[in-house]
Structure formats: structure tokens, C-alpha cells
Image (cartoon, rainbow, N blue to C red; front, side):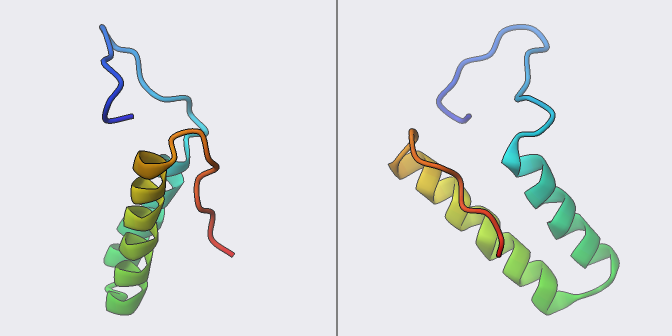
Length: 63
């Protein structure tokens, strides 16, 4: 998504993997779950890294 120029109010689809990843990070922070937030952030950053290295490959999904 970073490399894609967007015009107007265009945004990723509602089911884009990063939205759920962000929700998991925020929920762990709201619960004050330090290890859960760190794990969720680590997962998210790995998924972003994978998409940057292999944009055609699937996103990493939690087990």
C-alpha cells in the first residue's frame, strides 16, 4: 500500500489485512497487555515486510 499512490478518498478494501492487525494491536494496548501488544506489532511488521519484499505473495496471517 505504501508504494501505491492514491487519489481522493480511495483506501484499501474493508477486508485489508492491516485493519485487523491494527485492531489487534490497539485491543492489546487497551487491555494493557504488553506482551500481546508486542506480539501483535511484531506480526504486523513482519506482514508489512513480507508485502514489501514479495508484493504478490500472501500476507502473513496469525495462526
